[in-house]
Amino acid sequence: MKRVEQIQVFGTDMERKEFWLAARESAPIIVGAVPFGITCGIMGVASGLKPLETVLMSVLVFAGAAQFIGITMLAAGISGWGIVFTTLLINLRHLLMGASLAPYLVRLPLPKQALLAFGMVDESYALTASRIPVAGYNEYYQLGSNTSFYLAWTLSTIAGVYLGGHIPDPLAWGLDFAMPATFIVLLVPRLLDRVSMVVCLVAAVTTVMADLYLPGKWYIIIACLAASIAGGLMGKRGSNNAD
Amino acid sequence: MRIETVLIILGMAVVTFMTRFGSFIFFRQTGIPAWLERWLKHVPTAILTSLIVPSLLLPKGELDLTFGNSYLLAGIVAVFVAYKSRNAMTTLSVSMAAMFFLRWLS
Image 1 (cartoon, rainbow over the protein chains, first blue to last red):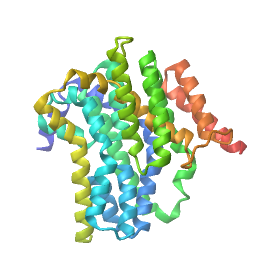
Image 2 (cartoon, rainbow over the protein chains, first blue to last red; image 1 turned 120 degrees about the vertical axis):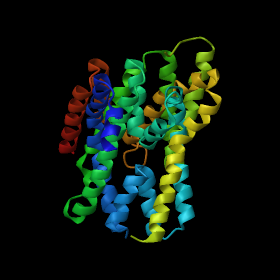
Image 3 (cartoon, rainbow over the protein chains, first blue to last red; image 1 turned 60 degrees about the vertical axis):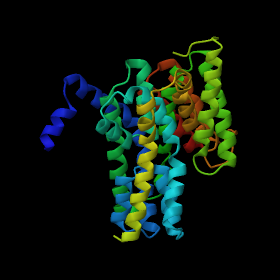
Image 4 (cartoon, rainbow over the protein chains, first blue to last red; image 1 turned 180 degrees about the vertical axis):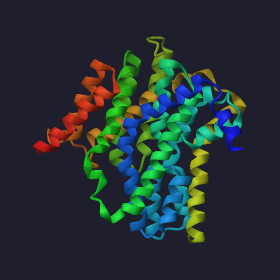
């Protein structure tokens, strides 16, 4: 069963290449994500979750921000429904990411869509979407980056659970800068035309405003809606073409 | 493991998966209208910006536009190197070096 699946996953050399290319291109962002995974493990145990429960959360939920907030709420004794509902709100931004990849993904068989959807986190989405203007959409590229982040997240949570008290605060290392730095490399080539620059500017301003005054990750949703609507309206006037 | 905690974790997993899968299920039925696709084209740029900006401008949760903000300064270095080199490893190594240097100075 396992072997049959593997043969199906990698039909051709080309597909294997895309998978490993994605894994390599994920590496710099993973450097920045690992301290958060370790922190998640430390936090889970420190908040009174059992080691296995903390790891199970990373294995099944696989959503950084939602897990941090979920763990905090569990420790505060907030009811299960409250935690599940908050998780839903924090993760609503994935609907926008999903919608932006939908034109490519709806062509795939449903089980493949489900597998790729499960692994769609901010980082793997950013890489996959940035690959599209360069080389088109490739499901094996997305699978490669999803898998890389999934392994990094679960393994670093396990590390956090077991190293817990023995290491200094991993978020003080400054490695968290690797993440925005890599996203900058992905963003800069997108800003070649006027419409994209306006989209970026609108997103930047609304992000700052929303992050200052709204809880959680709402700023991503607000900024994404405001900026993409601005871009869509500008594109409609035919002043420019962002393709 | 406690049954209640496991149920909460399962609940979190289910709703998270729904947000990731929801758009594919929805658009599978209807297809994607042209006007929406024109908007969606800008989503990656908007989300990338939204992921970068808080870590550079609000590293400690409040707006910090001073020279004491090493994330902002190293971020400016990263934008410059990314524009010139178009290379992830170059950008990362130069801007991380800038980051460590700034931390060492302060």
